[in-house]
Image (cartoon, rainbow, N blue to C red; front, side, top):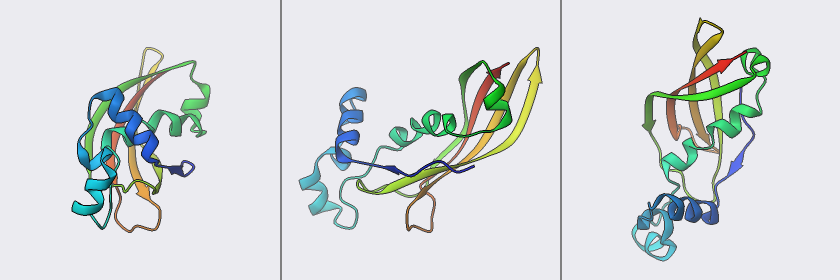
Length: 135
C-alpha cells in the first residue's frame, strides 16, 4: 500500500528541530544551506520523516489494521537513510507486510517500508517497522 504524498515544509522541519533539539544547520539554516548545499538547500531530518509512518499507516486498509482495537509501535529492525530529502519535496511511504506473528490475541506485523521522494529514482529511506496489534 502507498500513502498519500506529504509535503516537507521548512516550518515542519523547524518545528521538529525545536521539539527534539536537533537544530543542526543542514535542517534549519536556509541561508547557510543555500551556500554550502546548493543542490538541495536544507534537508529534512530522517527521524522526522520516520515519525510520519503512523499517520501514513492509519490511512491504509490492511485487514490486520482495520480489525485491531489497539496498536503499539514495537520498534524497528532496520532503518537506512539512503537519499537526503530536500525541504520542499513531497514524500510518500510504500508499506508491505513482510511477516506476521500471532500469539495470545496479539499480532506483531513487520512492515517493509520504502519512502519515496517525488521525481527521484533512489528511495529516501528503507526500514522495517514493527507494529503490535490487539484485536
